[in-house]
Length: 290
Image (cartoon, rainbow, N blue to C red; front, side, top):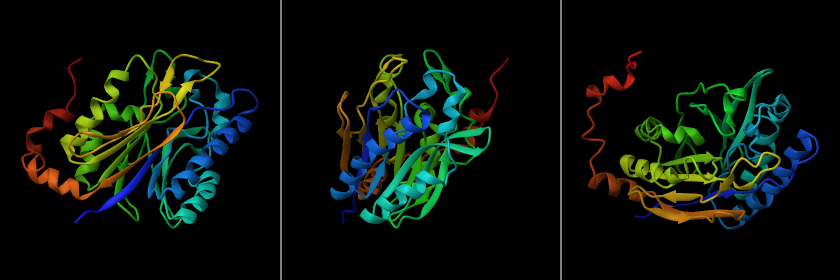
């Protein structure tokens, strides 16, 4: 018997470059609301917004003014969007710049269940600091939560954020813990890693027998213009096949009907979890030689 869950991803460009941090943040939040409403009207049951959805990808520079865009989680944004979750009976994954206490900030994703209840959060584990323009260690402390599973109204979901996707252990742990759909909200530009975008995560979906939803923003963000965000948000099924893919240059809502029964069907055919030998993998936790 089919167990279909309609899921969605946003890919949205930043609408405002000038003004105060608060004004820029409000503009991006306001721009996302019609996409959330559209998803609800289309019957989307689980919607994931893009990485730090409430602003530009400010990690292109190192400026403490962007700390002003951080907020507690749960906090104002989770409260605001819980109303949309309740209105449409829709689970929301909200990637937010989190202020744990003054001076301590995380790259976080909050989960709101279909009844508007805050379920918890995941904090980005791996923090890049690479040229050109990914100066994330200036803004984020590494995550402290051990890959939580969120039992939502429609599916068990797991989250890992952007750069975490380059570390296959993330998807493996979440799948072993029972996640059925993994979400990877991202902000990545053309060039350095674009060729990996449709290589790594479909392979991880197949290796773990899960669905993966990966989204990316679009456009070139001023004043930095260090690269173009190429969208191409997609869902991959447990066989590693792309179910749907968004455009490279257009604001849009990307949706797909995911049949969760495919997870068991795929795993029954490929017995990767049965044939694992974790006792032989001790070296993976060892140290490299100096």
